[in-house]
Image 1 (cartoon, helix red, strand yellow):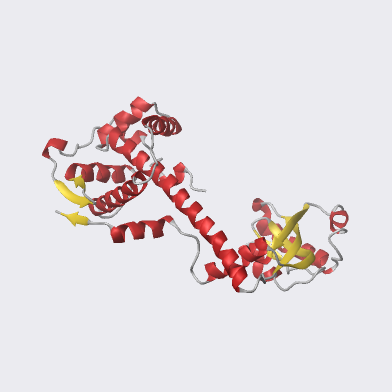
Image 2 (tube, rainbow, N blue to C red):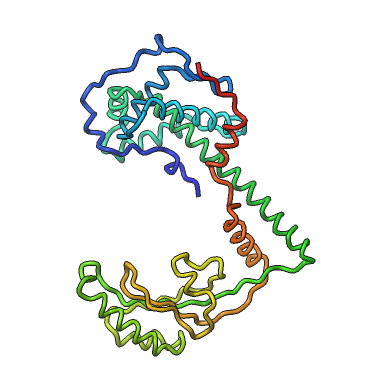
Length: 310
């Protein structure tokens, strides 16, 4: 769910623009001063200069120095969080990612090191950034796993609180019928295809006969979508499907695929652990009590942190 590349800012830009153009370098580490302290971890003016250069390399706009300070504060919070557990990120893992990132930008690791040095970022700063995000990804996954175990216990408690009664959800067996319209022909054909789809929808009898009926039509796709509990229905179709009975269909809708409708093959009421989990998850999401996010974790860490500005 949380993979490394989702956390590592891929400044996959035109790195070639700055490859061989020496830029003004920030002041040396010797001349740097401590500007921030996060949970006893110092952040120097040199650190801020390197992160500011990193943001420039990503073509970020705005008050880059302030953005750099905020990113470094977050990095310090993330790193202190995962270092407080058993999570450790080996140099070999960082170097391997660094090499893969260089290759994805058609550079060698040595060339990427040169680019980062010339831009004022330095390879070491970027590698520590990689390490921090890798550790953070593992930390968030561990927190979410713990939250899932807690949720499973909560479901059991909710069932017991209801005297063993589980909530009921409607299960739908669905079939999708698509009158395909290529993007290049939407302007000239979509209206006509919509009428064709509507004509078929009005003659719909059951899901078993649909494939045979569609076989004589041009560019019509029939897809069996399988079983879906009501909370699992795709968001853009859910309101059109809920309340339909067996043998009924949604109205024809125009989508990026063409003109389509969904038929309800069968429905039934389901009351089991999975249905209970889906129903209560939907209720939690509707009330804003969804799964724990990395933003929520960061907010908790920031609230407990000791952050000093010099």
